[in-house]
Amino acid sequence: MYIRGFSCIRFRMSENNFLPLYSYLTKIMNPEVARMVAMFMNILHTYSIIEKKPRDYGIGIKLTLSEVQIITQIGDNPGVNLTQLADITCVTRGAISQMIVKLAGKKLVVKDQTKNNKEFNLNLSETGKTVYLNSQEIRREVFTFAQSLYSAATPHDREMVKRLFGAIQENLKERINT
Image (cartoon, rainbow, N blue to C red; front, side):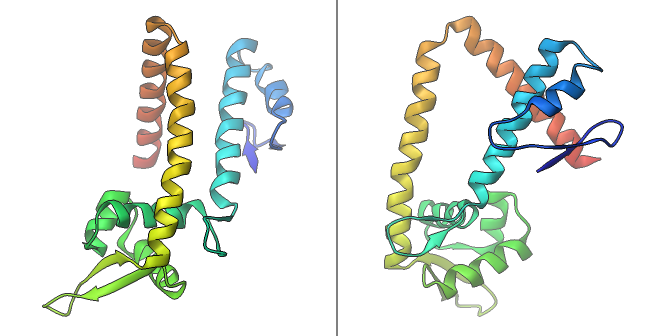
């Protein structure tokens, strides 16, 4: 992943190396802030690697996190249609449609025609249900880790993290809308 600096200098980010970005940022901001920004960028980069890396969820087929997230939403909302799924996931209807074609081709999702023949309801096949159940275990592991971090933090630390995440979320929303 390349991160473009303010003067269009590119930094090559590796999974465990944010020093090139940190070195650049210390020239334009407080070193402590620069380190936090570089660490945050490294977290985003690492997440993008995880999101793209296919993984077997117990069915002998490797799936990306994006595919599993759609399977999870269908498992959580049986009978959901394309429009509803697009609304739930905040992804375009076209992108959802492409993903459903892909998942149906892998025999993970079943499209059930509705009475009006214009829409169809989405459900998981038996294999899709296996992926759904196995992905729930991984979700539990992630949430258990988050819970342990939360439990170890002071109330002051928790409030600070909430404010920080809220500010980051608002900043990202603004960037999407510009």
